Length: 593
Image (tube, helix red, strand yellow):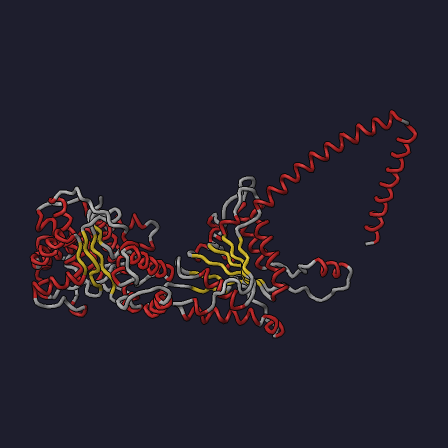
């Protein structure tokens, strides 16, 4: 330490001596020496000015680029409380535990514990992950920083690191004032992808590995060494007046992602995002709660109740529910009503799911008839083979890229599917082609998506869930496409078998098919209630109950005997339907435009 101080003093004395010698030379040299000195000084000043100007430009540029899209919210500014977060009471209970830790961080430290540093919110879009972070910050009465992970990325190498450093530096400063601080990073997978897979964010334009460097900076800032953050404490510690262990300001990092599986393992280790909370779409009771919350804010008539709306929106997220309620009010306002009703809500749902109505007025009657029978085939199969679902609407009015569609809605939440239900879904997909061959005497090109869905369901039936003769799963194979190709003969045989069964079904209910097609040609679309009334008028009974349905496979029989065995099977057992198979769409759209 003494030798270092002596070196500093020697350098200072040397500079003083050199300065004295230069002044003496200028004084002794007279005016000529002064002119030379002024010329040299002028050149040095211009050079210094150019260097400083360039530095200022780069500093200004980096300062502007380093300003990330971060929104700082002080306690009480949002006003979001637990009463505003609806639909997932279990999530609220877990979040309240986080708030209790943030409020009592000092007492928790006295017990010898360490404040939590990371909370990862996982789940599909629209489930309220970012809103939950706002509620936690407001209830804990601590500052809240909202940042988007992609905003940290930059074309210049190192600028993203500066953004991360700046936000954590400010968070630690605010944590010293308010006791704690929360940083929320949305879409953290944009910068936190696994480095083994070449992820970790984008790459800098003027540097290699910019994305990995950004991830490394985030890892460091989330779990930094115990250092004094204030300049005063650093000064006291340099003088030896502060000897106790440095305390780390309690900064909680909350991140949200839809893809937790792609995150780097270093982010998920204890000390960083060691707590994970899955925020999923609400169930029936949760949707009733969410609808009750939003419907109280708008004017609606008695026909639109939270219970009825929740039954129609299985799988909807809170963000989707909010959007549908608002769209229902928009539709009611456009038709001149003072209150939104169930029909407005239904129209809002259909527009959201299928798109706007775009009728083709120039379509010829023959083509309309083709589309009507196509959708009638789907509707009959859905009504008879899927008793766990209810037919929602069948239409031959163009929506989006489809000339028509037949859609169902589940009667209640279901979390698994039986083998007969998957087979029923295959038959629903093939019903349109069966009707075309049986009643129109031709094959149309509108079955593209139907055949794709049927093939995928048959492949899952045989090669994924082990419902065929083998327990082999192509998920264990290297290439799913190659595995599907190897199962092509069995899949084709299964599809042929189900086609024979559904052909028998539509032949036995030919009056039902013709009546639905006629009504579609007259009115353009039919609701599920109208289709049920048509069935009652024709047959005088309700459709089969779910317990009556048991579809099986007869494809193992010889080719000539397959049709006969399928006919005997359908004659012996009542026809009923099952839910959609794995990874399939419940809406069966008609011929593609």
